[in-house]
Image 1 (spheres, rainbow, N blue to C red):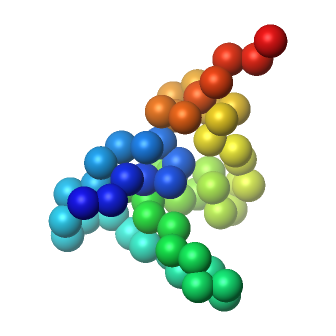
Image 2: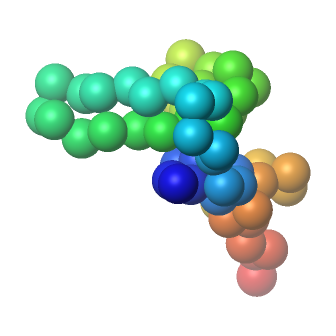
Length: 58
């Protein structure tokens, strides 16, 4: 099992999507919401309140 790179949720086997960059790095996403926020909208998971990687600012 792998974790979503955006929201840090566990992704069950057979679900989710994997995007492979030109550098060979694999990006695992649990949903299209996570994929769109990371790739198309270029948002950082640390700034998304619904993300598991969210950190409050100072």
